[in-house]
Amino acid sequence: MKFFLDTASLAEIKWASEAGLIDGVTTNPSLMAKDLGDLDPREVIRRICEMVPGSVSAEVVSLGAEEMYQEGKELAKIADNVTVKVPMTEAGLIATKRLATDGIKVNVTLCFSSMQCLMAAKAGAAFVSPFIGRVDDIGQVGMDIISEARQMFDNYGFDTEILAASIRHPRHVADAALIGADVATVPTKILKQMMLHPLTDKGLSQFMDDWNKVSSKGE
Ligand code: E4P
Image (cartoon, rainbow, N blue to C red; front, side, top):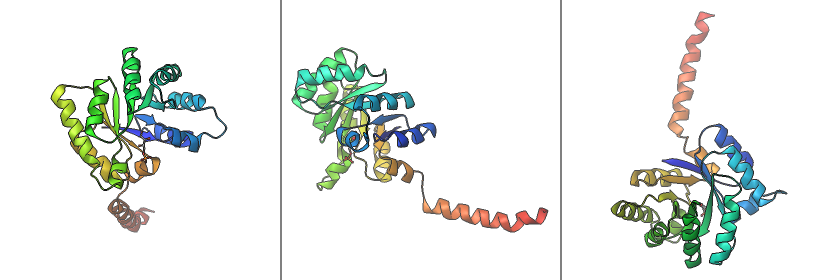
């Protein structure tokens, strides 16, 4: 399973990339608005692409099919590893088909059902992003979308990658991995939580205490 970092924070991406913990990055307009600072959005994407060799999703902010297509083509020029992110709308699917036909990778975002995932795959999306946490938030089971999409894609041989998004905790990542999602995109806080377990800390502390009791003997 690939791990993407779900942020536009250059500092967080630098840390995770240099640590070798991530395979790519996803951004969205909300994340960009939060971390843009004084920089131009294209410059932020360019800098992320320099730091991370894998897929970097940059989202269009147009709503019409033609406008999304033109905006997507411009975003794709920023770097070879840009994946153009488009919303799961009728216009988004038309833009996806056109961008994919031009050889540009597309991530169809804001997917909340397996049917939407299947439509996006048929349009030629390289990635589909089911938003697990937001579905859980309204009392439904977000992970069901991943299971159903996995089965659908396998039934028909789609190579569209399932990118589990809107991840709220490490268990979401574990469940998505068990089902066979190709990618999980996680906020930095969750990536850090994924490395932690209280028994690891307790065990390490015990090892160090025991070792320190005998290590002074050789002095
Ligand atoms: C995916 O690419 C989105 O950026 C993201 O996962 C949305 O998550 P949220 O529901 O935490 O905003």
